[in-house]
Length: 330
Image 1 (cartoon, rainbow, N blue to C red):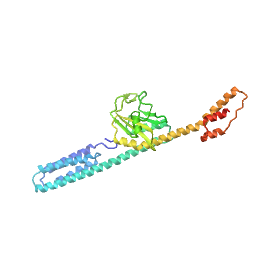
Image 2: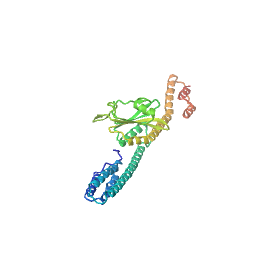
Image 3: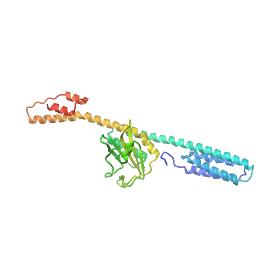
């Protein structure tokens, strides 16, 4: 059952069965010509309250059987041909109501499903807010997705320029046979990356990877691998393990949030690179001070002079750090 559907109501099921039985008994003890069978439309309408489109159809099938049985078993009354025509109209009406009810339930499920997806998108956006590092972002994403989808384990791999590196995991104990990095075409992860589409695998073989805690370990039976794409480029790959089967709603939800996750990953990478660039002049300045002290220790009377121009050119990107060091030593 889909997680956004409600369980069948036993009272409602009992009301439908009771109404069908009651109408059949009344129809059996009344002669033909008394349209007791019209009351069969009540259980068909009650089936609208269920969350399964097949329920009104099943009730209409039961109504058809009971209506025909009443035609054969009821006491004689009016002309049998007129009674047959009347009951045929009643059967057609019940099937029309059943078709409308199935359509009504499907629309209600679609609305409930859209609400479920949007609620998940909002929750995920809240977990991605702030200037998070890649590790923290990956952990937040995996924890949120696992809780919302009911996954027992997961991992996220982010492109670092040399391949896709495992950045964060959820529910995976240390020592599990899970790759640290992979490239396009390497296993299931590489296939999903190469073809840029979500892969769902059911009935995983033993030993693929394990889920563990202080109480023990177990292996997931179902797997979903989703490449996360922004502007046509995959910058991360998500892997989730489940004990239960992956549903279409799970897959659709991941496909809907994939781009927003990829944008968050790209932003985190940009922030990391920017911070590295901001820290670079401080590192170079420290190294130059050490070089100056070293030269002065070799020649105590040597006077070293600072030039600011190379640092200015380094900040705007027109000078390599090695040129700065060479300029300072000179």
